[in-house]
Image 1 (tube, rainbow, N blue to C red):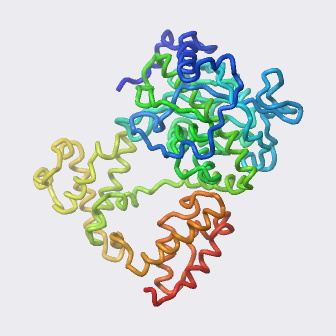
Image 2 (cartoon, helix red, strand yellow):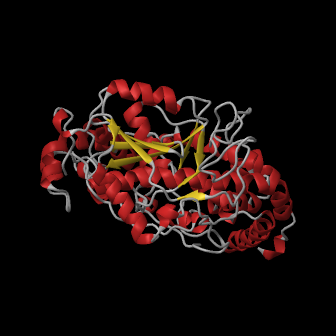
Image 3 (cartoon, rainbow, N blue to C red):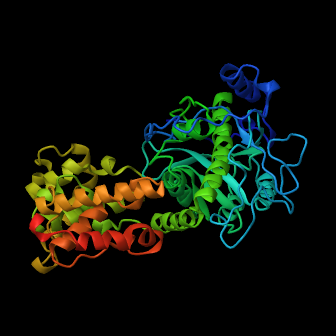
Length: 501
């Protein structure tokens, strides 16, 4: 894998408009998909209601995780004095907004453009930022916007932490591509991400939050995840970016450049065009979803869910709990689990320290082999079946020390056995009945049932029923889920006949 070299300024373009080859790449894509699009810039491309219902999945871990295309699109949204899709009228609302009002919550209280607002296929204005001074100036502009579409490109092939390679932002009219390999101080960008007056719009944001936290030391807030908003407005659960763009905007995206080397410099014209189109589509999705949420009354629910996403993003699994993620640990008893816990905790800390994937340090199969063999010296360690010689050579002393610590854990401090296998039949029957109940409620609410409750929540609820004291899991006992399903679901479970067991 090639990495970017910030020490070669000659290979980085200075701040300003991108060269003609990028616009040629964008223009060729537009012309290929929509012949004559340039002469009909504001023709609506809204898809039929049921179109593009398929879901997208992660293409892989090497670079960005979502299949994206190059086709640029933007909406013109305005306030009371303007109109939608009119190139001769200002797109900004009175007071400098973008068709939104900055009320008490930047996500829940948005004034929406109509669902049939025109979608433009014109090529957006693109600026590549490789200079600290221009980043500062751009950040000042971004902080005057009520919302920004945000995306990242990153690589994660042989590192523990993802490596940020590009940051894309758009306000619907202009696209900025920030090169983090060329700018030593990204503090202006971090300031924008933390600005409470600017809503940051992302799609399937978990990996973006992780890479931005590692690179900038902060997460974007307030947040609007279009994948979550789509599920909460009846568009489908866990829709991939391409599927959602096709469903709501009527645009079919390609998956070119998803696995390209984003750390190489200079980036190709195709990569720049791909990255620019990403956030331009994203801003259009945002406007459409906010309009749908406004009509369905889901704005407050979505705002609450976004806050919860941010709160959960800050919750890391402690090193001492990493052993629960190891496949095969459910077969071990408490004494062996105590040893596995020490080994997994050491591996987690070592992987972070060396910035290497966990499996490059010691893989899961090797950890389980060590638990089974319990070697006490180097010779016995080298004889463990399946343990790579390199691991013995580089990590031998640390592994022996972790094994010794695990063996010394007193009985009362050992972990309980990890539950495995399906729940008892009576609980499975109740879980199935709860899922049917949730399906009916989801249909009434026009929301994806998976958003209302996860299987883990239902299993927890079934266990409490089996113990004779039905109780809602925390996730269902608070917030909008309590209002939507929690109380009624609990009453349903309480009324579930014991003889069914």
